[in-house]
Amino acid sequence: MSGDTKGQVMGNYGQRAVNMVRGEGVYLYDDRGRAYLDFTAGIAVVNLGHAHPEVTRAIAEQAGTLVHCSNLYGIPLQQSLASKLALQSGGHLNRAFFCNSGAEANEAAMKLARKYAARTENESLPLRTKLVSLPGAFHGRTFGALSITPKPLYHAGYQPLVPNCVTPDTLDGVLAEIDETTAACFVEIVQGEGGLRPLESAYLQEIQAKCRKVGALLVVDEVQTGIGRTGTFFAYSQVGLEPDIVTLAKGLGNGVPIGALLATQHVADAFLPGSHGSTFGGNPLAMAAANQVVDVVSKESFLAHVRTMGEYLSDLLQKRFTGVAGRGLMWGFDVDDAKAFVAAALDAGVLLTAVGDKRVRVVPPLIIEEADIVEFEQRLQNVQA
Ligand SMILES: *Cc1c(COP(=O)(O)O)cnc(C)c1O
Image 1 (cartoon, rainbow, N blue to C red):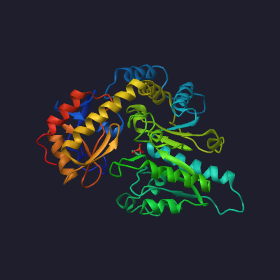
Image 2: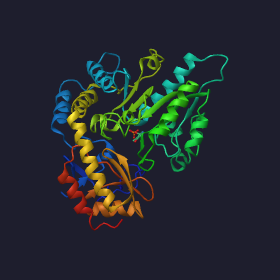
Image 3: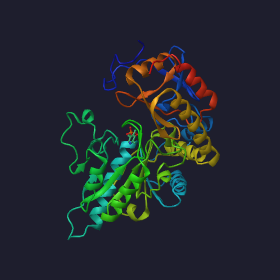
Image 4: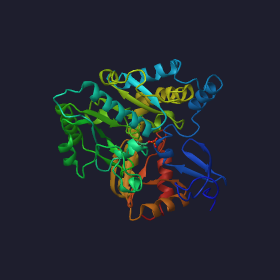
């Protein structure tokens, strides 16, 4: 009833059930003071919980120091963040470009893949411009990212999209599609928006092998799975991949808008001065938040906590629901009617999201404790699956 859809804000998000005005830890509070257990974490963004003291301090201090100066000038906090992220990749992804969202990170990856191919083009080979993605993928809503996101509802009314983006209907079809004309293949380790579906390690390794064989780049979209969400800093390390490019966003700023493109030095060298850019990207405010987030999340004890809580949560989900799948603290399960289930959960004081007609996603803040999971279970007790 108190939703804010009336007025001058566009209607593209539809009706919202409640207005949120405050957050603390794993709880969100609406404009009537009601508390909700936030197991959406702002769509896998607020990994350290709402109003995390150290991130809040970092943002506040930076806001009083320097918010923005543009990329006309060097920003030391970009250097420190890039080196922290490189370290988490074992030194492999030792170049970073900063932007403002997941879609922007994937746009940058699409451009870098084409630029890299254009620079290394062998004239005896056909033009290498094809970008391949997987059935069920989600990479964002801008024209480029949308072109590698095979969801008819999201495409309706926007054609033509970016040429030479191909998404086969089957996983085998993807392997067949990767050939000498392919610039890159984009994969997620666990498909988030596409129904919370983990992909098998063996399959992902086959994709990597095919990319290597034909000289295409492997891009892992870790916008949702990255920054500790699946129990390791990057999810790709759990499935034995060594990507050429990784994209990040959601959890990286704990709510401050940010995106990042990581690449090996060899691939990143295709971006020359003027090749790409962003006014806001890498601004000191976002960099201060992300530096603090990475300092917290990269601690082995923190990641071990995510794995422990993940096991506890998945055991509990498995006792009650079918189709439970995921990694770390990123889980999905089946219900008869996901929209109805999510609405009933909200009434019961638990925030969840639907990722399909019959699929529900659980992505709590990574700081949850056992008691929060028990509370989650109790609040959902009378919600019909
Ligand atoms: C959310 C998401 C995106 C898009 O991120 P935005 O910040 O909304 O542009 C891209 N890829 C994946 C895997 C995502 O989950």
